[in-house]
Image (cartoon, rainbow, N blue to C red; front, side, top):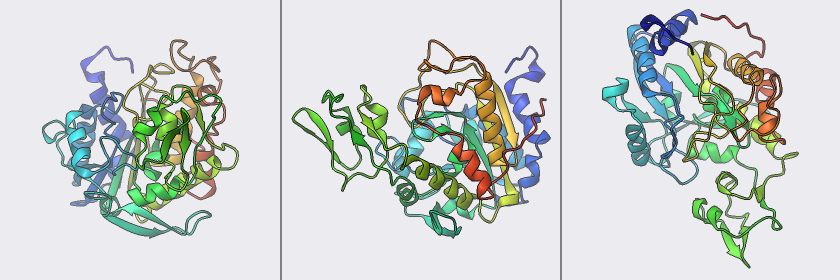
Length: 359
């Protein structure tokens, strides 16, 4: 991320990176091209800079494509659970036509009903439910802010595909794990009851109680609990959750495997997903930007690059701060983040082998 010359600023680097990685080869003349990214929840500020997104938009247009910037509605309540709120949030965060040079389209429609069922024939899913406008696009460039994640370990290209390209129904199919309350730790603050999209959490005798028949497994309660009194069965449920994400990623690229490009932004590497309405201090220094045609390889490289760094002692990362240590385990000891990569390779999503080519 160092720059001492106007020809070597981040905007110039993004343009060179796009060209060097051959991402222009994925674009079809006059073809609708989805530029998939995360606009960030209101209150979050670590999402990809819209000025950087503009460079990719212009590259797609220069190669003859018709770009649109897109994401899908969220499962949980918040500022992006329907297309109206979602687009307003995108605009508030700078993703306006005057800045990015392309329309913002919420790919699963006003309230998540614009979908396409895609047959994948995998272990957990025979069919997956993908947002309709993403499925309809001829090409897709996936821009991912690489960071840690509360349950999946990290969020990069694979998760941006699997969770981000799924409709609301598809997201719910992936979130079949259910959290539980550790009663001894719970203080009854009620923060979990405020964020639950299905009113599945109540306070009983000054302790939180999750009604599992109502719970949709969005994990928002885990994110906001100040005492970490809400947990999951990490051994049996979370590996399956991660595998379901990876299978949905395969569904998201189905039919356009040769027309996919990926860029991971390894900057402001936070301990949480951009779905949370805040941005905590980065756990390692800024590293750079990667590009690839392979979603598994780019995530494997990103994972390794983060772990090569020395951790920020002033961040949430209080363990595994030394260079080479697993920062994702240091943040959440129960996570198996690399399962995304192992399972992605197993089902043919991509390869974990990569060569870093610095520019």
